[in-house]
Amino acid sequence: MLSSAVAAVAFAGDVLNLVFAIIQWTDSEVAMALSIPISVMVGIGGWMLVLAAAWRVRRNYLRRIGIAMSAVVVNSDLRRKHGRAMFNFDLWQVQVEVQFPHPDSGTDARVQKRYFYPQFHEVKARALAERLSVGSSVPLVVHKNYAVFDIPKRPIWADIW
Image (cartoon, rainbow, N blue to C red):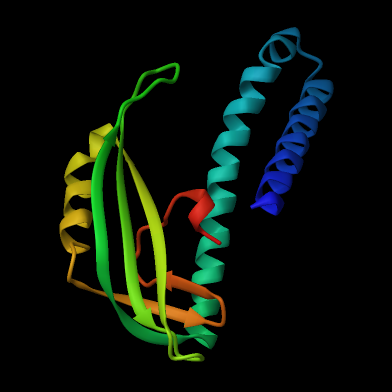
């Protein structure tokens, strides 16, 4: 988790340096005035792409070396989180906890993941919550201490690892 925060700060610094280099190259006063908002927008968009790529690489790696198995959903929750941010958009949170016998130790292990959807994608959030309801089976890939749900939706950034 700490490494993710350090990577985010380093990425933001690199984006800021890139935007300032473009401003020096163009020598534009308008670009200078818009440098911070542009850096924020490029940084947020770029970080989302980096996280998506990291998740895909990790999931493909675990698919290659891990053990595919099935887990049973023991807890599932769909919740609407009311927005308190600048634009006041709500989020739909699907929180899922599964239980499975660990392939190495044979003991019962549990994994919990959270998925966020913007308020405009309520139908998708409800469909995922219905698909991952209590008692249903979920494909899972396990390797040592890592487990990933083998579904196409990426969990929130903290649950990627």
